[in-house]
Length: 121
Image (cartoon, rainbow, N blue to C red):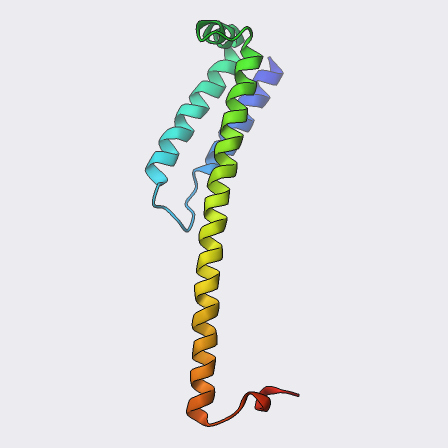
């Protein structure tokens, strides 16, 4: 009984942290909906573990724990993919920013008539 309460509290707290506003709220509604579905499924699986076994056998998996493992593998791969895409986008933004900064500095130097050696210590 205590472990169920502890697990449900942990799930709800983690969900609250995951649904808080971030800088990029473009997919906030979808993220909140998926998180709500996940919380419901997680709480139900804690309260009724036999439900998870029934669902696993319904889809052709032997045990509920195996189904959870397979779901976690799929979620992990989706996370890795989204992080890879986010990292690639950040790298592109950083490259563009670096180029703009270099062009701006070069423009400032040429407009002031100074050479590149003036910044050397």
